[in-house]
Length: 198
Length: 198
DNA sequence: TGTACATCAGTGAACGCGCGTTCACTGATGTAC
DNA sequence: TGTACATCAGTGAACGCGCGTTCACTGATGTAC
Image (cartoon, rainbow over all chains, first blue to last red; front, side, top):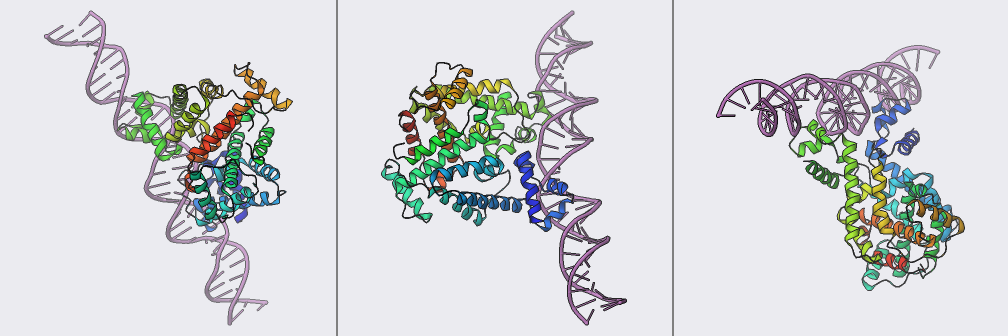
């Protein structure tokens, strides 16, 4: 039943966007009265938190299942995002109106998925400035990646940023509207990160 | 009065996010009854469309005012976005719930701003594949940029995508959360586009 | 095998809320003669 | 200068809607003796 509720919730998220996610609507679709759901979730926010945690876990699984090279991992990342854009938005776009995420599990979950992606980057970027290198070192250390050289961390973050740009534009249909197939764009960005001279 | 309504609308957008933009709330803040606004705007969607058009126009102005080199234009783009993230989201993130934009002026306005940014790119990317080159040529032509070589168009789109990734992450506070100053990241992306070997 | 009880999923009514929008109207301001 | 009228910004009540959440409850199922 818990799973059934999440299923319907995700379907509504996919079809009607974030604002379509409502306790009453889910209940109606399940053929059940609204208050019935309160037996399973403390409320709308709790359900939402659960959906986000699931999405992080699912993304992590997808990345883990990919071949451990950079290109395959990035391809898996993109495939996951484009197959279910609503879940990608749930993780990386602006949160829903009135939803306040102050759940420690969220921080931990996001770490798992991102670290996995970032540690597949091994090429180093052109040397960052001393200031940026310091910031990067501090960040890597706080993430349990103390061994990572700043130039590699920078490369990883750059990759992440470039991917996010491509994916969010692709998800909203911008490349489709331009008549451009995004596949080659992705391949190019991966190549740009894979070689130090980008 | 038209301007005053927009002012309040933008302030609410900035403070409470998109869902805070409501006719009644604007009216209340103006010390006026709800229906009074219908004398100035046909409804919520019309007001929203006006806000988007304004934002495009404002962004175009900001880009035009910048020095005509790539770095300055990108800096202006970023400055505009970070100074008023809510307006950037209005243009480039998911539209508001229930808002259907089928206004020809929107298409024209978005074109103005983007073409301005994209035409400041002159370096060419490594040669795109024949397929992609064809798509790029068709797109450039439909945008009145028939002279643009596909490799330059690709470079421009790559720049746009990279900027969008950086800006949307910066706007949502991701870099701040990592303790990283985003300025150098921007400078690097501009450099990567400015030189053909990225 | 039969009775008494506890558990607990789900119900329906109700709460207060804010939304966009319509409608008939008031009342001040400006214009024409 | 004074009167008759038109214009029109703004009002308040009302419409139907959906929301999250609470509350006391029903009624079926399972358990203990």
